Image 1 (cartoon, rainbow, N blue to C red):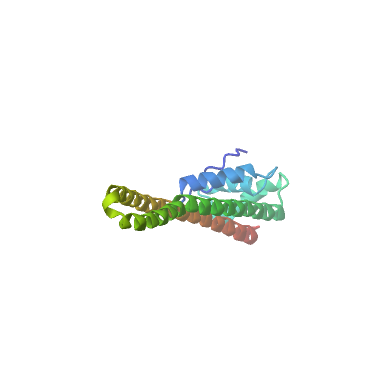
Image 2 (cartoon, rainbow, N blue to C red):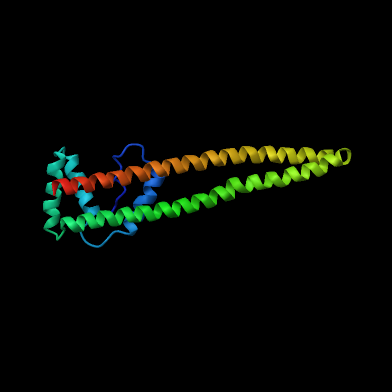
Length: 183
């Protein structure tokens, strides 16, 4: 079966392409050997694409998969495995995001704090240091704009990732419920 998982959850609304590709790559990298949830999900997708009723599609995909040694328990266990893979990726993403926020936003705030201290010194020597004071104020303005833009960008990335992550997790949960219901 084709191991390209890029379209596995593509039908879900509102997935961020970059986040989805990242998560699919993680699933591919951690794909268990043999026929398991991912291959079952691909088979199920093909049946649903033929407008097969969902319960029948679940049963048909499982009937075919069972000829390759897939059991209901293995299907549920492998779905749980992939949820754990996604959870691990989310944890790594959260850590990386926190570090990027600190580097991109926190560093700008720290730089501004240093500039403010320097401004107090300059104000005491305003006649002699007036041109330096103007330069520092301009740099702070650029930092504030950059900080705001980076904060919005990182917030959007987090929102997109969270929405994608939750959608995929919920889809797997729905599949687990249907597997339990129909199989």
